[in-house]
Amino acid sequence: MTAAPAVVSLEQLLAGRGESEPECWIGPGASPPQGILFVGGEPKVGKSLLVANLALALAAGQDHAGFVVPQRRRVLMCQFELPTGQFAERMAAMRSRLGPTGADTNLLVDTRAAGHFLSAPQGMNHFLAAARAAGAEVIVLDPLYSAHDQDENDTRAMAALCQSLLRLREAAKAALIVVHHVRKSAPRGEVGSAFRGSSALHAVGDSYLLLRACGQTAGTVELRFQFRYAAAPAPRLLRLDPDTLWFSGAGPEPVAGTVSRRKVEAGDVRQALTGLGSAARFNRLRDRLMSETRCSNRTAQLAIAEACDHGVILRQDGQYSLPPPS
Image (cartoon, rainbow, N blue to C red; front, side, top):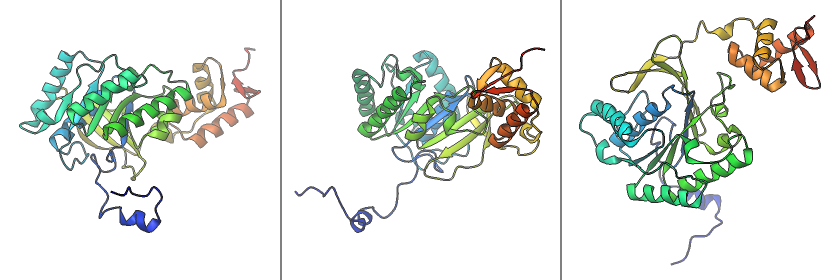
């Protein structure tokens, strides 16, 4: 049998493409086949609950909270935060809402995931063995920081971790759903670049979901999207049922009346700089100002320039500081 050529013409490439592209496993656009989906947010905002919801929806083949699930998938859950008994209680509460479905047999749990690192050969072998034993089409890692021992502030270390994620995906031939945390100073409008180690993670991920607490209503979170291969939907609100632990749609994000519509004053710049310890480089000051006032990048730049012009803050050698007390 003759091996297929490594180099082909465009005509040959298109001829071997097949009649249609495979549909997303979570649509529209959230999880392409063998894609990497990152789900992030601040601590205790509900990242793990939403991911468990999605895992059950995938295993059952049921649409959920605006996400379309065309058919059932085999899902392997690798979670590192809860003892197995507590995790079982959480899943039992969620399962009660589904009723009789294929989720019981299609969702599998790696009860020995804790302590294994993707960055170590032994750890990688563990996850691959678990994925093969489960026949997994989707692998959930919750949270990512418990599955590695790398410095998340080191770009090279994070790039190596991303290569480990790619190796897991390719060897297991499965999609990945990865729970990760975000930078504390990330402006509200950011999605993919808000994740820790973003310069590396932003290159490896296919889709990003970002949860933020919504101060207007208790138990409600705002969900934002960034997709590589599809147009991102508009931000939406989700509401958590404390009894079933399921999120449900609570409507689109409100447009009017946000803080970002007010003028950003020089006093806001001074307050942001004070919060940074009275001195900071431009990028840190800009990001802090955007986070506190929910203003745009351009508005923050203009406000900082105006504060310098009026002597509210000082700039020297690229460093911004408060004036000395008179």
